[in-house]
Image (cartoon, rainbow, N blue to C red):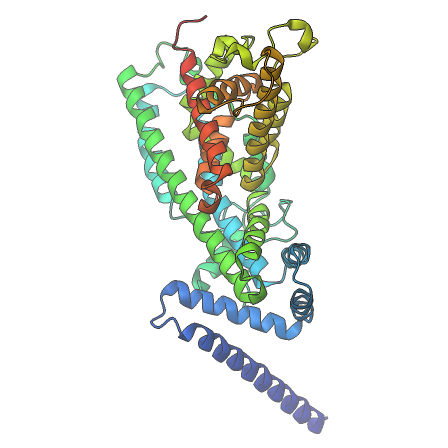
Amino acid sequence: MMENLIIAKARQDALQRKVEERRLRLQEAANRRFAASGAMTAEDQEQRALYTNVLEYEQDHDWPKQWKANIKENPDASIVLGLVSYLLSCSDHPVVQLLRKHQYRVYNRLYPIVSRSHLESASLSLNSSHRTQKFLHSGELLSADMNIDDQRFISPNSSLPLSHCYELNTNCDIEEEEEEEESQVETTVDRENSFEDLETFLSHLDWVPPDDLDTDPEQACDPLIQSDIEEMEARVLKEQLKAIVKDIHIAIDQLLSLCLLSFECLNTASYRDLCLASIEEAFFTPLWSALMALFRKVHREREQAFETSMRIYCNSSPGDIGVPSKLFPNDPELLQGSYPYKAAVQELKLLVQDSCPQRKLECIVRTLRLICAYAENYRCHNESDSTPKTAAIGADDLLPILSFVALRCQCPQLVAECAALEEFIHEGYLIGEEGYCLTSMQTALVYVESLHSKPQP
């Protein structure tokens, strides 16, 4: 027995030496990969550690090599999409682990902001001095939350559309102390602090205005104090939003960089765009409702102005909004009980159902294309000379038509949605047709917001 124990111990020591030798060998490969950059920053060091994890993963799995060989033999966009899709389905791959890490980090910042905002707006029994002191204190807490990076708001039992709870690779030595604290706290959190809990808040996004909350004169807050509180709240929320948007941009860039390091065959202009689109869809899908709750809170005044105009002009004709008579049918029989540009309205309504910024932008582009097609048909019908000599509409005509479509859509959330798109759409998409369509939509929304202050037709 003693001889067997000695042999087993020797085998174990040999195995450990092999594991350590492989780790050092992969570490040297990662060092060589990043040595060309010269002096390494903290970001470079973290990226090197992540790339080492990728090399270790590829030592134990054959599918990355097979996909690389397939793309080399048949470089096709469909194969690239298949590779990225398969990659994002592998929960143990370092890219997916990094994705989960960033998702939960953003969620942990969103959860206290959104849930606190909802609870404060629903409070019915706070006197003026208590409300003032409470918000002054909560303002400090909100600022402190900008540095939250832990897991205390995550339930280990939550059923977010992520296949697995977040786990950092144990071989990664970055933020070790922070991760140990997170794992200790995570074991004590209860069920109420989960993604499902936040969904209960997000199902009531139309916050009650303060005037409707404090109906008791004795509890009413002084108008000047109330104004100061609202101004402070708006400023803190904007700072929170700015910080979260910055974190998301850093996360997307880091995920794309690690993905391209893992699969060098994707490092071309067209493949990079496909890879970025897939990463953004996976990243934003479980987070968009919470992000939109914060964007709607920040842009609440604009949404209220939009809703006011919507109530006033909901049944108005295109001519009442400023659309030239040649660009909509004047004969009611031609509409057959419908209204002009209906297909464009229905298309725009689909925007709020998506959770990916890129698909939302594509929805706006399709909406404007439908508007142009409708305008061409209406002009050909109204004018005797139907031969198209120029484009049916220019920028001056597009604005009122798009405003009419937005009004008919009856969705004030479009204000926050487009504000979010402006933050998250990649700069490369904002140069051509997509950028023009998004800018036109933003301009139309601002125009709709101002309609209620103008005399009615």
